[in-house]
Length: 480
Ligand code: ADP
Ligand code: ADP
Ligand code: MG
Image 1 (cartoon, rainbow, N blue to C red):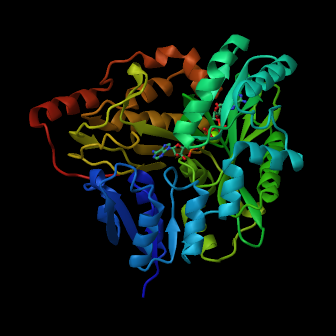
Image 2: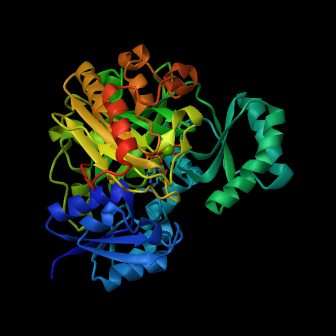
Image 3: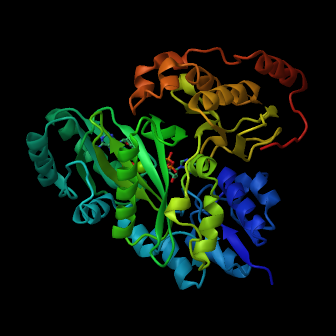
């Protein structure tokens, strides 16, 4: 019987993983909830299992997902990102059911998913990090601890949910008054969002760059890195644009950060693919932030500059193979940029545009262009999931070539129906600071002109919009 792997996810990442499974000559089993019944990931999988009406609750239902995997004779489960990917109980349930979880062990996920435990492991290993606290005590006692920390370290301070992720559960506090106000709110929101009300403090790094390192480790402990990524361009602490390799790092600093990432991974007993995130300040000092114990949305840029298929490697390692390449065989060539094309209105605080039907979908192609999407003409975007439609990743040998290619692709890209982030990115690629690689995590706040555009900037887009209005719905074509 052929080897079958269940993909416990949806959207573009399910498709990315299904492709890798099928290239390995295995079979991919998809799962879906009712709102995703027309989703592309179901159609390209070898088998698809309906897990319930959802929304979200069934994708997150560990028993149902495990049951689907067992009933369909799967040997392994790939969690993708989001949903159950960083849930140690899910990894444990797979282990207990005799299914291979494609990721690190449940113990590692547990330790690294808790920002306070993770910081302790890293502190013990001598990894540099921002000053911070342990979990604050409950009630007034915790507030007192917070104010004492602020007296010692000064504002601004980050109040963070210990179990947080996805840019949620992070708030910047400027003074004692805000701390008194925000502290109880942070606790109750953390409880609602992460089922854990623990919060702790970190000193704020002012206008940092977000620099992260992709690592891969096999079960023998061999650990290599695939270089750096810059993910400083964010909205609400969530990434929008990702670049490999990171900018303006001297070769010595780059090597030091990558070696520190390997040390961090080893300290945590890490296996499979993961990402070590750092903040880099204007004095080129870097600080450990967290390890994401999963495939990252932006893994594509590292694949483009190293040529290594990270998902294929993940699957092979999880099924017991060794890493077949050494560090000195990993070569970073050229540059790659990924933009997340979301069904969102950037001019309206990135308000999601879910529920709308894609009336025209025309995607770009050509040299150095990669699309990871799940969208097609006539597709109605479910309102109940995230708004990522397609990731556009381009490669170029020089930075200028990469930016020029990105501009050309964005000009060619036509999505009508929902508003998207495309016109915003068209402004971005023309911004002088972006072109110089001069940005940090405050970039969007300081570059408000990026939000000034007409909805359909290029002539192509204008024309497509007109056609869409006349025909309303086009053919069911699919390109990404
Ligand atoms: P990453 O760290 O993978 O680059 P973000 O920091 O933007 O991505 O988001 C982190 C988390 O937010 C993901 O693990 C996931 O929980 C959630 N998330 C972001 N984008 C998506 C998406 N398109 N689909 C599902 N979950 C998402
Ligand atoms: P998540 O788990 O949600 O991804 P992170 O701890 O990785 O949370 O932080 C996400 C983003 O929040 C970072 O990329 C950065 O922009 C900002 N951030 C987090 N901690 C700090 C800090 N101590 N100082 C400055 N910015 C921070
Ligand atoms: Mg993070």
